[in-house]
Image 1: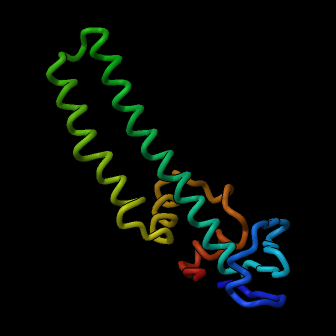
Image 2: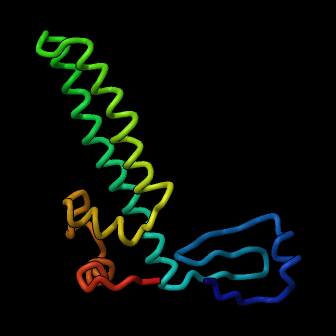
Length: 139
């Protein structure tokens, strides 16, 4: 949701050829667009979900990396490694993709990420942390 101040129609708004973003305010030609607090929180939730996805996928890739290391040192045969790669591709990575991208519910994913320790409470803004603790969706 945006509040728009200024003059001109949406046609002139869309036709403007320049934009300036400064301190939460987007200036498009003669119009000023101000992001609402809900929109800012929604953006923070999306950004933290992206961080959580990267961290969770990275942790799973680390496990796969360790399997390669075990194979290189003769602790795992090539067939077992191949099965682990197949499992990672068809199960682990796919489930994470569905969770964070395909069927993404960013609010639920953020609460899940905090619960799993992928995102610490100290990393979140005070306002977002309060909403997570209260289980109150900000939008």
